[in-house]
Length: 491
Image (cartoon, rainbow, N blue to C red):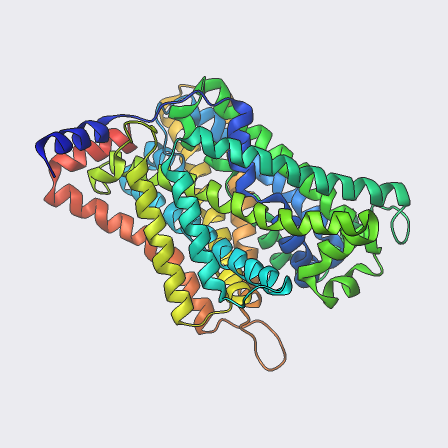
């Protein structure tokens, strides 16, 4: 590298991310991460089949209430943390830099596992689609690698390009699902319209823990609004509004869409229809109520939906890595900002390489892209994010009790406390039913914690421990870097 190039890299690394994203653009980024059509077509049928059946739609509403309470504290904290970083920064401000670094690593685990799980799913869908159209039979992982490369190119460029791509895809997804629900409502469904999904007996039926896991998973990504602080037009107003808008929008949309699925086949027939093939339930439902044209449209949008999901998570992960590099936790070069695109381009390259390695490992181990890659790692991400948000709520309470910079009890203590309780109870339910998600069961089909369950759950323990050990090492061996860590994480 020449002296000029070295100087360019050094200067680039010191530049911050900038932009003028508004509320709508940020909501597009984070809601697209929830991948609306993927959730309605993939996760919702599984929630109905493996979770609490007819009562599954209610769990979206319950999850939304819990996460809305969490968002109140998050929004209050945003006004007092003048830097991006979301969870690990907020935890650091409230519970100390070591806890903040532990939170940073579990956040990395969360977003990496959910992203790579969708890479497995989209690779499988592309493989099946191409083969069904008479194309060559190609392994799922080859398509996954192709998608990773495309996402890497978009992630390398300026975020405005990504937000535009996500915005177009998101509008199309939401539109087709709302058309389906409208057609079902107008026709009266299979057995007439009702509120059966919200009856208490149906809510607690079956395996509500599995259902809750899949419901909360649909919201992963909404909290990343704070990650885009430096690129927001007016952070103190834009970030809170985008956070509330994302939670409420996701909650209402998924509750309505899953209610429509139940009504389409009727409370008495939805389980049989889902058991026939949960992966094609959305296609059969759309075909039944919107015809062949609707079915073809959904098939195409299902692929673009998953693409939007991985693209959005890629943007979130690269900004987490950018923030961690700024805190001195990752190599400084990872925090470099491209001189032209104004994007964290080195971080994007690192995340692309990470995804390639993980998909390669899954391919070598011959894991099933849906039943193992998607299901296992989405489960890890869901439990990790629930625990991470609970710790963040506690950090918010501690911060305001100590500093008293905001004297609104509801925003700084009551709502965060209620959110933390709801998240901890949700995490407990998820752990109890975790073996069902990964297929660990005894001869009678009852869940037992086997080797796969323990290994996946151990990741949620190992990653924060890495952060704690790293914080201790930096404090002893690199005092100057520890001071930098203090400034970046704990103000």
